[in-house]
Image (cartoon, rainbow, N blue to C red; front, side):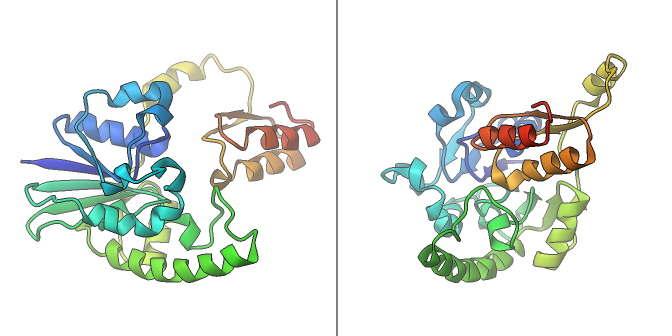
Length: 255
């Protein structure tokens, strides 16, 4: 059986990339098709993908591709539709908030499983890592583009044979926006390591482990714990780090 993996893009290392790693462990010989691959941006995490068979889309050769990846998501479907997956028996796509990996085209006899981390947040009113509404001209243009992208997002969400949600919450979003049932398979976590550490923990606190970007909503957790006087630890890095530190300080929370 020939297997192919499809992933949004590879230029940062987060939860979606950890899922991709596990999928590659299951199918080590499977090639990975992605919209864009930037080893330098991955830093030391690039070694995790060393030796993989990675095929980027035509966007890889586009001038200033790394800077244009966000606005060029309107061409995301075209990037993934350009891949020829006709020789594969099983295709597993990993689709999240930015691109449309589930848009790949497969043969009728090919089984396409799509692991949905979330329907694209920017299309359905959820907080994202960017703010296209800060200027009136970007707000108007963004809303017009998003209208047509929502239509297309719904259409391509009907292509996979089976949709897999990473949580019950995402399953509800899939049902609401795509009008499809999904199977919930939680992201892989090594519970044995957590259980081994539980006996060593003496303090009680809430923990957030995340990339520190606006779309993750870490500021909401900081505000909630600050107002309720609850202990909180935040682990992660990202562009929101300094703002979250200042927010925690205003509530006298250690950060």
